[in-house]
View 1 (cartoon, rainbow, N blue to C red):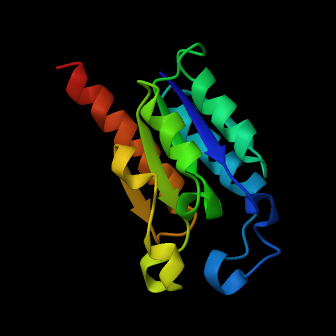
View 2 (view 1 turned 45 degrees about the horizontal axis):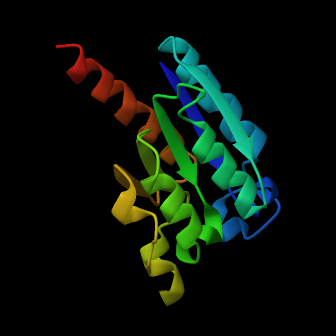
Length: 148
């Protein structure tokens, strides 16, 4: 199984920005923990981060050619603004799980709407850095169901 973990704008600032909302962990720590969890399940995991909408779209489009079995996506603020990322997800057959470190529904009103949610397999929000591993576990459970 091959999973892509894509992180959008400002997630490279984890550990430095808005610690009350996002905690003190860094993106490198999130990726290290997620890679260890993936390795334990014999899953190939590739993590990428970009502050550029087009690059995220290119990675989503390329997920089919890369033969990805799933995408864990934290699109950051693009979640609430990007019809283009929504359309990119809708254009591929690779399932996407949307994740958010903070509970976006307990924050500012503008964060309550996701353009991604209607085209994602599911959404996990508000469990800190654990949202990434919870999404990985969802893909693992799906693989087990599909193997039955």
